Image (cartoon, rainbow, N blue to C red):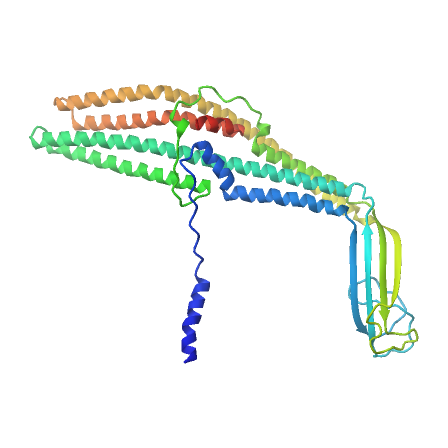
Length: 465
């Protein structure tokens, strides 16, 4: 009976242990968000930025760790044992397996044992190190600078992705409005053609063609609405609120983009270039530290210790609890110098490895600089092209509107076909999309230029006014 009662309990416990924990509901981001506010939120909230901030904190702790080498070292020991007292004359190399025995050699071996104890404190300090500790601290500081550059680059990359997702949302919404206008226009035309067909003024094929065009326009609307939802989902993810609905306020993006090009900036200040420079500085600091590793080690030491033993000099044992407590104390002060002469080859080989890595890092920096300069050139060309397109789209739109009006008039007068009207309306829809996205294309090109130069703040402020 007991077993039958416990079985359901065990089953419930197993289910509770194996079921995944319910995830907490995601927070709701503040809104509506301007582009600048969205980028700022992603820079504070996106997990990758938080991870890079943790790397900076770890590097700061690494500096504190490197500075602990300036502190003296105090080693304390306490040991108790029970052992035999058979000692032999002769030498063995130092090892970590065979315990050492002090005292004279005995003529006979016995299996009797006694207690032994030891306790002591050894204080060691390295008064001078020929610059090694300072070099290690500088290497740790260079590692922090590299971590900070990595965090800045992560924030830069997240900001770019956020801005791009934001602009995609704005572009998809404009495409949705153009698609909605096209559906409404086709619906009006459909109703007009249906009235003509019902009055036997036009063939039924015309109505079928318009119905097909209307259905196609509705499908196009569904697709652009899907694109809008996908763009919003992507934006929420880059904000660090995946799965949450995000509200945006395009603000300045709805107006005319700035007509002046962004000022020239050196690519040396670009976050990607800064990471490469920090990597080189860190490598150079590491090389300086390695150069100082092959050197003598000087130690000023002071010891206070005591020993106790139950073994007598003649080989006998006092028995009982003798030796459990250190009975004889000593102190000592001294100065030691240790120097591994044969470590020179290892040190030189390690320096050569780091030197080759430094050569690679410098070549990589040169390649990054070249790529960034190329990006800036291409981005400026894109800005010029986007502005030229924006100047041309009003002409395209005006011509498409006139064509659509004329096609409608020709059809109603019986001089044109429904195919001409459908083609004119497709051209008008494309012209409306092109014109509505033209100014946004300039914004996107300007952001591409700002991204290539590594400075987004000025443009973000302008786009959020």
